[in-house]
Image (cartoon, rainbow over all chains, first blue to last red; front, side, top):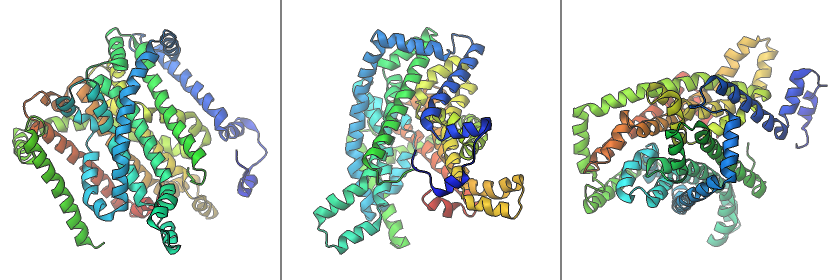
Length: 273
Length: 254
């Protein structure tokens, strides 16, 4: 925890009672998050006892299944092949969206021209493009890559465009006043000012790509983790299904928090909530 | 930049995209990409046919039930999270997890739990949208200026009045923004759920994919786009209408 500000020190009272100790605990997320995690698992376990095993599983059986299938190597193998189309789709989306986002954000004419169109397409649920993608790319690897691409490209584009547009004009004016040439303007001013929203775009895109990864495997030919889930569904194997869902949620959350951590490490000057 | 120039640019942007689409469509053929001229004709046919709009209305009603529940539960929960560290710490990790969870991956699980009917779709929409409603309300209630609360207290305002006259008005813009975000995701989730079990409007989109022309699919996409944009406009209009301070608050970079 960072040093307390004077205001906080005035506010701090001698503690006592359950409420105060909980409030104290809340100041230390490292302690409290595992606790809340455990608490949630208990609630889930309680709910699961009320529902038949075939349609809903308790966290203990889900975790057991997750461990079992990981030890046999089945889940890691499927997960690795799932990652292939996710990473390819995400990289393609970044390659397209980052330059376009910069162009839109830094050039007002381009922004005014294409902002309405981008927003219009962005408001279409990406999944609705699936029939189209089937016509164009079939139902296998190419189709999955294309869905991942479609699902994250607009999120990244919108984030990068907004970020590039909102670069503080004063820092550019200062550089101009010091007669910066185009090269140093780009490398010493614009680029460092872009790191924060580039990482934000990367984070949002990655979470979307994890989401798209499993969506693609369920909506085209079911393969890898999607096939695993479908098989589990047809056998009423609730623990196996929930294991995939839970595992992917944890993976997505891990990606998100990991990139946030990276932001705080790489960009300490960038104050964020 | 003056207004007429802006209008001109926006108009020409749309025109460029439509022209490129028309050209591309003519070259690729109707099977791969129907050009806008053909889509427009097919759109009018579908409108007159009526199935598109009745399916859409039915799907929207079901979606609104799920979305209504996520507002009813999500808004107070988010507000409470912002005011109490304990509630925040207990709920926050799970809400974050809900936000990152893929709707498509939840679909098979929810089919086992709820079947493929109304409850299934409402539940999917609920889970997909509540996270956004909660998190936006949370940021709003955490950002309430303590000075405003202090002023209210200095004038001897009671607890309930503080809540009614200070906290709620300050929170309002965030609740509306949360509802807008949530609604976008609710519509997405509805389409995912319906495409998964091939019913309703999403089912319509998925089934038409097997036809010979892409014009009907594109028409369905245009309609869902109009619905999504329209819902967004309506909610921000409501925001401005009910709370005139809405714009200034949201423009402040919050």
